Image (cartoon, rainbow, N blue to C red; front, top):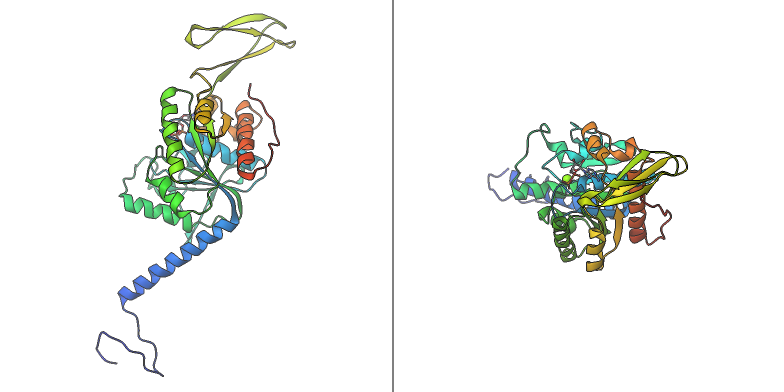
Length: 334
Ligand SMILES: Nc1ncnc2c1ncn2[C@@H]1O[C@H](COP(=O)(O)OP(=O)(O)O)[C@@H](O)[C@H]1O
Ligand SMILES: [Mg+2]
């Protein structure tokens, strides 16, 4: 064989060996093509895709994203949860998947299976240990997100719920640009005016991404206190801001009152202002905090409780928006 760097195929001879650089380029092109094909396949195998956003951190977005996934799974639907936030392992924790590591086989990434059969992929599965924060350069992080979109073997899903880091950052932009047919964005807010200001930014951002806004959820909205008294007893409960609330015990002596500890109604106001649907309220429930620590989300530990009922109602509103079906449940939060 000649030593010339240019290799020519002459009829009857074996094809010339590609150079290592060409080999690498061919592999990259092949992987790119495979990823594009699998993303196109996802369009068919995943019926609905929802992005969950908030203007700032700490409003309970991951708690809500995980709650939505679990509430959908409670209906017997096939659900996936994609956690794009590299800064903390909150989603794996709530799904009882702490310290899970990414499972890769033949170039495909396999989701972990969490509570109620929800399939979970989290950027936190890439962490060495959950206490070590990761600082990734922008392009590497966005490359990893693209890979998470194209290379995960989700199988058939009714819903894929995607959780993001807080704010209007590169991550939702990358997902919106790479994942076709996103049904919509759900904006999570708390009732305080600062959070509402941030959620207004999220709505403007969502609109700029040309992804429909499914609606706004008000989290940490109202805290229900319960008690026992004599049947029919009339009482006064001291509420926030110096107000007193009249309470009457029922025939069994049970009473309850809902305190708007962070005010209420702001999420609805924001939704109305922007002409987007209001999807409902999730109450303030210390069980969410405990659930984050214990690795069991509130919906799993108390499936019949007020918070689970609230999530079912929010999910029903989302399904009405996304599937165009009329709401099948009409549950009220007390
Ligand atoms: N409805 C709620 N009631 C009580 N605590 C909540 C509620 N939603 C979230 N939390 C708590 O607030 C904290 C932040 O929640 P998280 O979901 O991590 O927020 P984000 O993803 O917006 O940063 C966690 O400790 C969580 O348990
Ligand atoms: Mg979060």
